Image: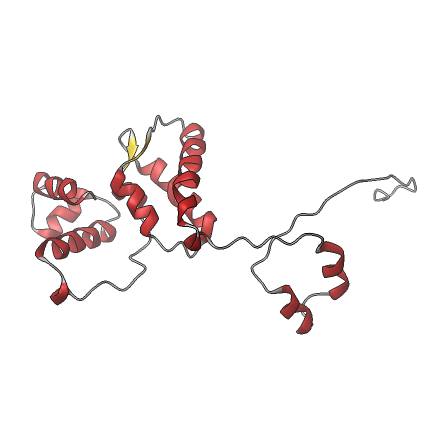
Length: 180
């Protein structure tokens, strides 16, 4: 290897680690990726399933991100409340590990207590189609409406309580009852 502007050759020892979600064989066949480059790079191939297919990794990754972001922002956070951890496990994570990292970072910034709550997570939206209201119990409907109101008002309990026709204390009791 020669540095730009130099005529002196230097010996280097490098390893290239790359990642893609594209099927490289298909890309080569379609003429969108050079076959010779694939042969040079593809010494060892590791298939890593998306986060939604390895849910057992979510608590460990979330704890790692929490520790890193809590230190970065100097916030003394002890962990996740059970409802928050369940919300993380229930999310489909279409953005994969990067999305989880950003959600945890946002929760660290939004949290007011010593643990991350479900309301701190501000998950983008319910990703799966909710059940029909007619098929839900009264508690499920109430929990669903509370979640929607909190999402609509970005976790602002006062605004959500007002929209639901509840006092703040009544909404807090329901949040505790449903583990939200």
